[in-house]
Structures are given as C-alpha cells and as structure tokens.
Image 1 (cartoon, one colour):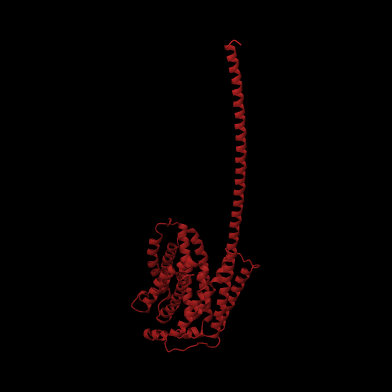
Image 2 (cartoon, rainbow, N blue to C red; image 1 turned 180 degrees about the vertical axis):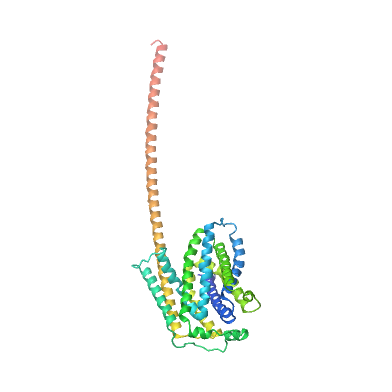
Length: 411
C-alpha cells in the first residue's frame, strides 16, 4: 500500500477522533452554560436546534435539490415524532441528568444506547434474538454487562481516584461572576439516582429515535433534508416548550458570553458541521466503524471535566464506565459478526445463481449446437435429394429429346 492509500485509510480515523472531541466539548459547554451560568436548559436546547437548522437547511437545499422527491404528510409526521423523541425529549432529559450528576457520569451512560437500541429492535421485531449463535450471545451478554455497569455507576461511588489535581475551576469562576448558587453540593449529596434515571431516559428516547429514523430513511431517503427537517421540528418544539414554562426575556438574550459560545458551538459546530463529517465517515466505512469511537468521548470528557470543571473521578464511576464500554464493544462485535454472516450468505446465493446461469447457458449452447448440426444434416439431405431430382430430370429430358430427334429423322 502506497502513501496515498495510507492517507486515505487515516482520514476517516482522524475525522472520527475530531468528531468525538467536538462532541465531548458539547458536554463541557452544557455544564458551563446551564449549571454555572444559570441558562435555562430548555432555551439552550431550542437555540441549539434553531442554529443547527440555519446551517443544515441551506446545505440540504443545495446538495439534494436535484434528487429530492415531493414531501408527504407521512414524512412530515415522522419528522415531527423524530424531532420530539430524538431532539427535544432526549436533550432536555440529558441536560437535566447531567445537572444532577456530572459531565463524565452522563457521558458514560450514553454508551448504553447500542444495548438499549438492541432491546427495542428485538421488541419491535427489527432484529432476531438468535440466542443460539455467537453473535446473538455476544449482544445479549453485552446488554447485560452494560446494564450492570450502569447500576454500578449509579449506586456505588467509591474512593476518589483523580490522577491529577489542578487549580483551574471554570465552574467556580462563572458562579462567582454571576452570583449563582452552587449546585455542586446538591449533585454530590443528593440526587445521583434521579440524575441516572433522567440520563437513562434520554438514552431510551435516543435509541427509539434511531429506530424511527431508520423508518424515516426508508420513507424519505434524503439524509440532509430529513436531518434538517428534524432539526426544524426540534427547534420549534423546544422553543414552544421553553416559552410555556419560562417567559423571562432575559433567558433568551444572548450576549458575548458563555451562552452565545455554547449555542454556536453546540448548534453550528456539533449539530451542523460535525454531522456532515460523521455522515461522510459512515458512508466511507459504515455505521459500525463510527460507533467504535464512542468511548473516546468518555475519555475526553473525563479528562476535560477534571481539568476544567474540577470534577472528581471516583472508583464507582471508573468501574461502571469500564463495564459499559465492554458491553458496548460486545454488542458491536455481535452486530458486526451478524452482518458479516449475512453478507457471506448473500455472496453464496449470488455465486449459486451465477453457477446456475452458467450451466443453463452451457446447456442452451449445447442445444443450439445440436440444432445447428441437425439443420446442417437436413440441409445436406435436401440438397442431395434436389441434386438427384435434377439429375433424374435431366436424364428424362435427354431421353425425351432423343425420342424427338429420332422421330424427326424418320426412325
């Protein structure tokens, strides 16, 4: 493999690393804007999807305008439900759970999404359990390991294992600047279980969105347009939800501060630019390749959270995160093995069809050759008969001519 081939192989890997680092930054900005600056999380979610819509809508128009088919009411309803489940509900629950726990804790829980998606896919009969196969056993075991890791992460805290200590604390700096009340004591003392339930609920709705999105992709196979439409729906739903519960105009005001930076980062960079990069990686290497990099976000969030937000790493968080990542890779391995087996079966079927076609072509060719030989024999026989008949005619004509000559001569 030459240098060009190596570069082409490295590009998707580098792109996925950048995607995971940017997604890790989303958790940090969520924490800074909501917990430290006091921004309403519902307003933040609304702004995120509105900014994402402003980026994706023109992109979808120019990329898919020549191939896009007419929009139907069924597609609009599916987009509305996808926006509600995968956008408004999932993001509001996620930020609420992270507010009660930590960015590292919430990020670790998101690795449960493949296991929850597998359970829902089995319940909706999109996938078979196939417990007798190695792939099915791996997916079931991975799901159980992930659930065990989530329970350990929720109910066991353990000793502090932070490998480094810094004097940088953006949480304290922003709280002192805005004179906001500290939420760290509440998160540490109180509602770890409630935060866990909220994050798991977010993972559930996100997994449900993956299944609904697959159905929407079959109904309307235009990725950019459907994603932009979902962002528009999520933005409208989140804005209506935020306005119903909090009509304070100060919450919607954006200045040159952490709120504007969080909205631009999460909406334009994470939901806009990175979505295009992620789609390119999935197109080049497949969805399984993209999923393998998910635990990298957990590592980046853990490092950034301890360095920038003064979050403490505990033994329960570490062990639970390790179990969840092991369960994630078990589910991904089982899914990859199942996909490979199905691809091999399809290849065998195609090979069998090719063999049958070749045999039929050979038999047809043999029949054609036999038909040609029979036709040639018949033609030879016909020509011989015609030749004999012509010879007989010439003989008869010669005899008649002789008799005529003899009569004319008086014999």
